[in-house]
Length: 434
Ligand code: LLP
Image (tube, rainbow, N blue to C red):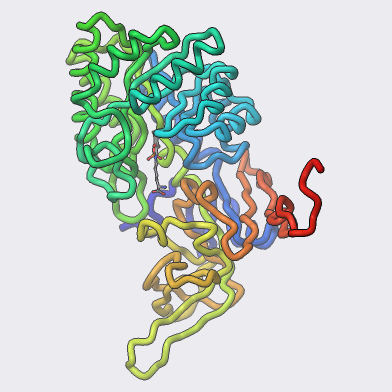
């Protein structure tokens, strides 16, 4: 395992951990902690790998913004020519606020509300990734009421095993996602019969943190089988969207590089005579995960009893499960590094937050030389960190900084405590609007 897994722009200059050449401890001092810091260059490099491999082909990379939906991150990808994969009206509003092009938006999600469908039609999204026949009917009614036709792609559940954590595996029969492969042709016939819909594509998404090419090839084969059947039934399909899911390196995983994955998928498309089709991707984690770190200050050290009783050493930091829930939720392993290495004998620590839950941990049994006041960096924190954060324990959400051309730019202010309950009403308060 390399000392700094998966973080291309992260390096040590002597004892000092740097992102894009900027010492992280200094950023933590300047902006306070907990603090997310992202390298814009790393994000652009990640999307560039997809785009280069797709050059000369009709394609669209739709960044799955659930991974990190901060406006400056969206702006970065919009300027790089990306579309967006959204799953709510709220995410659509963010795309528009960041200057993204709605005509490059695909709207995924297993439960869209009619109001969200209307909002997306109004904005002019590129297509709806529809997950059930009931949703086809609802969308048809919404579109007809607007005197429009809604562009649809059917999300098919290809029933392939992505070989990942059960909570983030989505392409198996037992998952709530997508239309069963066996029912897909009938669903396409139904879609084609509805006057408010226009069939434009097919899609799937088999899971997240996938570290192999094979499940993608299996899923693509299953999709192409359907494309052939559906087109034989007289319903043309324009694009094939293979979803997101490419993994990153948190410790010793070695996922394929994006360009290797893309090349193999293109080869399979060509081999099966589908090379003319537009290919869509919905990557989230692989565009932002390794581009970010979460910085946190050590508050208290609580060494276990030194009597052989097996007591644990706890290193209590100021970031918690509300800032980064992945360890608590998936038992995810994330590398933790001292921002400045100490010349001291390390000990083994459980790195935990101040939240009142035993599940509030960031890393277990980590070998670190630390003192209160030291800054630690949780690596590969650019994806599913800030977007999954909460205000549990009335903790304000962290601030975010993006490194742009060598400059540290604040892209999100630390939340103010007063704003956390600004929308709440005391029992004797007048009703809003009264
Ligand atoms: N498209 C669809 C329809 C999705 O549901 C997802 C992620 C993506 C694309 C992007 O997948 P990615 O490229 O990021 O793997 N919170 C979990 C991951 C949940 C992924 C949900 N769907 C985690 O922190 O590991």
